[in-house]
Image (cartoon, rainbow, N blue to C red; front, side, top):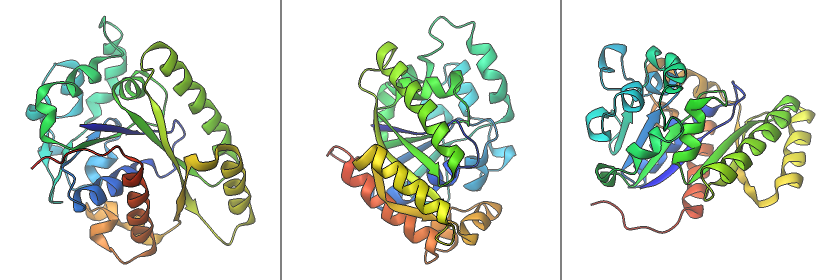
Amino acid sequence: MIKIAIANQKGGVGKTTTAINIATALAASGWRTLLIDLDPQGNASTGLGVKQSERENNSYKLLISNTSLVESYSETNVPGLDIIPATVNLSGAEVELVDFQNRTHRLQTVLDATDAQQWDICIIDCPPSLGLLTINALVAVDSIVVPLQCEFFALEGLSQLLQTVDRIQQRFNPDLSILGVALTMYDRRARLTDQVADDVRSCLGGLVFETVIPRNVRLSEAPSHGMPALVYDHRCAGSEAYISLARELIARLPEKEMVA
């Protein structure tokens, strides 16, 4: 199972929107996809229509109680896409994890289990912080995708994230790589948007995906209906951008035999 974290410690950059719609696009492309909501806010779960009453099996139990992937996931309304939802209990997990000897590797242990083989790919929506939950994700995955809002302060956050990735590589996961940086909330009317995009591309070169995700009303509306934008309105500019981004992402993935 290929494992990818969607991570950025800065909030409001389109991280959860990216996780939901990339996972949906992968499932639509024939990849048996698992989305793990590791954000205590549970926005990815809500955005896929998973009600609070349907979250008895969740990512908190996955980390704290040693439940398996098969015991923790729920099906979504998107064919081929399963989810391990988040609950508010996850907000206390970082404090509880401190008492575990293998606190940084809890998620890795679960994802390396044999029952993970029923999925082709796992997408992890990380919280907007660099605490133990995000560290668990970065230790467990093969690579990360960084959504980056096209604004000045986002560049500072990117620098901090790159430093964190370097530390994780040195201490826990030497194989961790950055699959790509996705520019989000792109507004062609704002000159600063173009300037930030140019600065990021000049700094990171080919790491930056060619596709940019525009500011789009339909992307904002979709979660309130419990749907990915690709299902809510697959013809809107935001959905078309995420479909294009998913194609780029798939092209960067290693070839593998798909689960039947």
